[in-house]
Length: 285
Image (cartoon, rainbow, N blue to C red; front, top):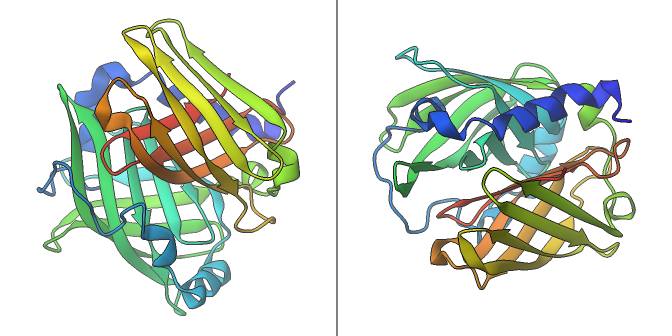
């Protein structure tokens, strides 16, 4: 039975999977949407360099300012367009990802100073109409407590786009993380409506393997990578994997992101990742 303490955050994750049909609203809800730019290419938080861009000092400052983990995000836009419920994961490394739905996330790398303020580059990645869009910008703000972060998203030209508040989900975040807990299991996800299925296996040494298949794509993607634990005190994992053999070439490449695992619901794994072009979201059944 799923624990009531963790059901709140996990229920919100599940709700995000059912919002794909209203993507006009979702695109408006993204932190950096409308900043300009877009298209492919690398950004300041390129997968190959992002994890090395955060200094040990910044990590120490982050842990002094806020406890990492899973957060509920409240996003406000100047145009007052309706915004869906967002979920965020924050790693001790400074990596943060916000989930809107399977095809829409914001990914950023933020550095904390001693005064609890933060800043760093971010990218919206979402599917709009018939193409993937990437909007680059930056996030700035401060941790007002160990469980609440307030900030603003700006375009690359420093034009304010949205304000946001991240409120930590304590029960979900405080479970801790370990390869012993998340490893030695195979996780699966199936969606009959879109005829898609995914499976991911994590070994106890952190090795990740898996596959993705959709009914319209007879050529399945295969995944090979790893999962690591940045800090055993917080329920957040760093994830990196290579996707190959995908029928849609945009889905090939190196994905990086974050994950959470509910140890009281041993089949529940959530991964939010991207390869700079498209999203890679996994929520086990």
